[in-house]
Image (cartoon, rainbow, N blue to C red; front, side):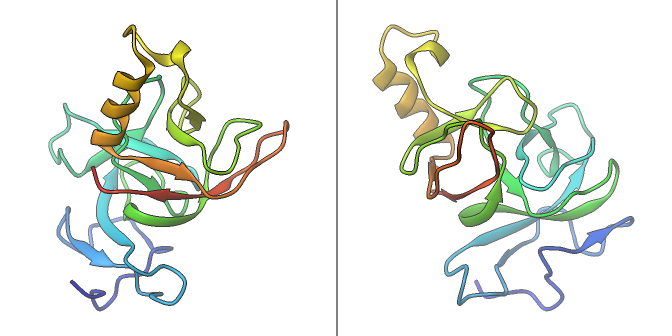
Length: 167
């Protein structure tokens, strides 16, 4: 694919500078090899590291996003920077993310999914499942967008590095 001229993952636009849904390789191929970005609209404000889901009743769906806010929500990407409501910017849909919000005491190597805390990833557990088999829920999470913690954080919680696989 290659990086699109003008693609800056830290850029925030008040009017769309690219067609919504435009995809690009991350311009920093040394630190983010194979990472794919998508240009989107923030329906509500995103914070740095928020996990994001589709806002399905929005005109610009599927490129209009909001932070996740409940367990078992399909995650479509993670925000690189804070983006104000109604503004536009790039989010990671596949590859390395240097700073993603994660629940306290997340272990490196943990498989992550949405949590009840806005924009925050949490380790997948049996308690998150409405099914009798945790394997089924984990398979469902992987099919949507597998996310693996590359770092650990402490009991105070902190943003961590993650990898988003392709679902």
